[in-house]
Image (cartoon, rainbow, N blue to C red; front, side):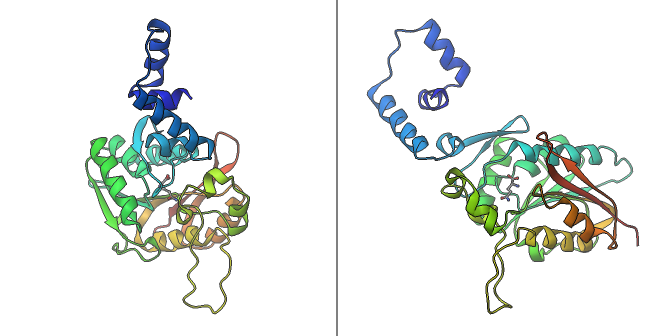
Length: 276
Ligand code: GLN
């Protein structure tokens, strides 16, 4: 209720509470009452608060969101922490480049661009609507050295051995898990940002998504476009760690590790591409 009221009045929650205490005689205008009732009704219908206010905080900054993009999750901040921890160790590389596969609101790529001044970044997404939100977020947050590309990361147009770091929070929920998610997520957030879309081009029957399809595609692309010694950081589902670790073992990867989120669940996969 406080978030909705603060948004309707055009202030933050702290300012709202201050006004309630210091100016208890203040009355809302009929328009403000109407607008806040409308938002309350949408919330009661399950719509995520971030879509009501149009903003979500991520890594200490404000990002615009709408139903074309996933609402940034706090767990995803782990990916930014890991990427920064690695990137800050690279000293002898003159023009390091990172790419964010499936940038959505741009929260990961923009956070990295703002923290890594000597890096260039590429943010890819298959959705034009998502890319336009990501671009708007980059402008609003004054992120520099970040380039946006409308592209399918399953077959990205990037050059071989051109990147130092790939980060990605791909859709990783299986069709079966999706059916169990809350209506807040299912009714409002874009399904293609959550569940891999399984191509039916080569099969006569359509298999339900296992959740691993896009992670595997990112790994396949990373094997080609990462420089030797480059790092891959993937957000993963909490039950996918061991399976993905086994898939990477024996291929051109070393130092494969799984990192836990603050809730203690496996949440990120890190791997270094071997030298040829
Ligand atoms: N990169 C964005 C995020 O982490 C979008 C991810 C997605 O759409 N799967 O929120």
